[in-house]
Image (tube, rainbow, N blue to C red; front, side, top):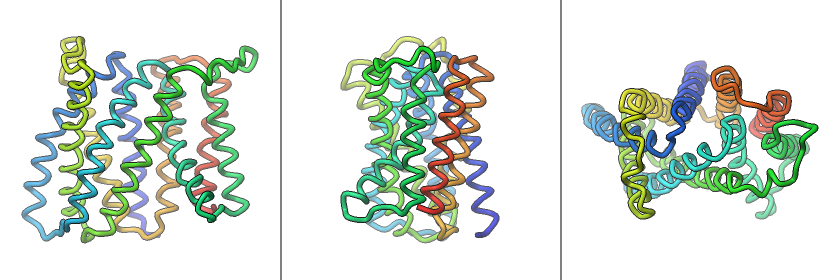
Length: 292
């Protein structure tokens, strides 16, 4: 595999974990996302304008995919904000990143395309890690943690990830390779995501959610830049390397970065339980991506 796609994915891991950690900073997740997504609009417009100076293609299939993906991603941000608002980072981040892989694998099984032994082992590790992550201690284990509302938000977050990722992969196959095409797609992706998210906030009557002054615009601007560049790097890497399974495995490194940083920065509880859970999730995802 070429070295550049691997480096792009690893860089995106730090950026992805970074903007998620910033989202957690003031515990005003929905407001932070509102500001962050508004700021991605001019960034996206600039990327589209600059990409127009270089050769690229954006066929009708890509337009359809980015429209669907943007709408779904608005819902993704909404559910992600609700999940972070009701649970710990060290639960939401690894589980929401892992469940989409299980969802896709389950669809393959239903279609009569079961994974091999390594794939089943990887899925079992992911399930074990996801089941363990909501607990804060071994001694205080309780089944009530699996009936909480935050679990619903995490599952819905994961479902939307699976949804927009599917459309993005189809679009990547339809577009010409190169950073210009990726920049155009990434620009429209973020613009439409903002429209979708603000539409959801307006629909539920929370468009003027309080806390804007407390959150400010500085850190959301940093988050917007990190999120935009992160997704641009991922799209570009997928265009350059045919071994998407390997890149998917490398992307799971963001889980390790995010969880370790959250314990360090936010002093969240459950270290003895959630670090092994994270290790199981990452190990399982790598098995599925590389050998499953």
